[in-house]
Amino acid sequence: MVRIVFFGTPAFAVPALSALIDSPYEVVALVTQPDRPKNRGQHVAPTPTRLVAEAHGIPVLTPEHLKAPAFLSTLEAVRPDLGVVAAYGKILPDAVLAAPRLRMVNLHASLLPRHRGASPVQAAIRAGDRVTGVSLMRVVSELDAGPVLATVEHRIGPDDSAADLERALASLAAELILRQVGPLVAGRLDEHVQDEASATYAPRLAKADGQVDWTRIAQVVHDHVRAMNPWPRAFSQLNAKRYVILRTAPTSPPRAGGPGEVLEASGERLVVAAGDATAIQVLDIQPAGRRTMPARAFLSGYTVRPGSRFGPATAP
Image 1: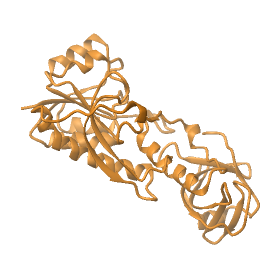
Image 2: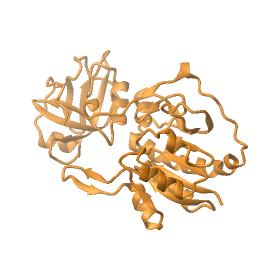
Image 3: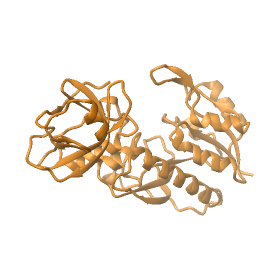
């Protein structure tokens, strides 16, 4: 039986971990990030993968330092044949890569070499990509640069948020690893070296990345809002107040206006001018400290007039 050690932390990794647990293979340990405070209450919460592993009686390792001798000894003691990584969150040092007999493979949420890095789902949406997918690659010391063993493609819907796309890719990642463990162990997978000249990078996002740039055309603003949902969320300022913008749609402008200018503000239509004489309709918006509301409810409770302007705001 193939003994697998799984490295993964967020919800994206849960379908792949669950699929391997339910497979003929044996998941002998989960390595995940240590529990950390979350949200405004700063309550310490276990990682999504930890909850799954503990529910199945699988040992959970949460090293602060991957080079720590105690962790490396424990990792070697479970005698893994294969390591599977899915959004673990840290670069793995050589000593960890060498621990499994068949080394490590990674499920990355893009079609490599496009969108290497920590935020490939958001990067694909922001870039206006129509197709993305999941790559199964061998892990090397350089970030997401190992040879690709297999891929699966997925078409991005025009209104897909990052949350929507991540859920779809997580399911595909689970299907991909189940199909490929057997051929991988048997040595039947061809390795394809990535084209370094085609590589693009998707660095970890910060809260400030959510700022809406209204000088961009409406489609780019729409893609930005989708990519920032659920985190760090798109935001802007109107009438000296900060608002989170959750859902939008490009629309025909009723008249010309400067970037960020409110062109319509009645009924269900909150229409804002974007770059190059385009416009975008804000569908869902959240005032600071309040719940998310559709445009109709927002316009009923807040004074917004044509001619007022959205602009830069301080990140939360």
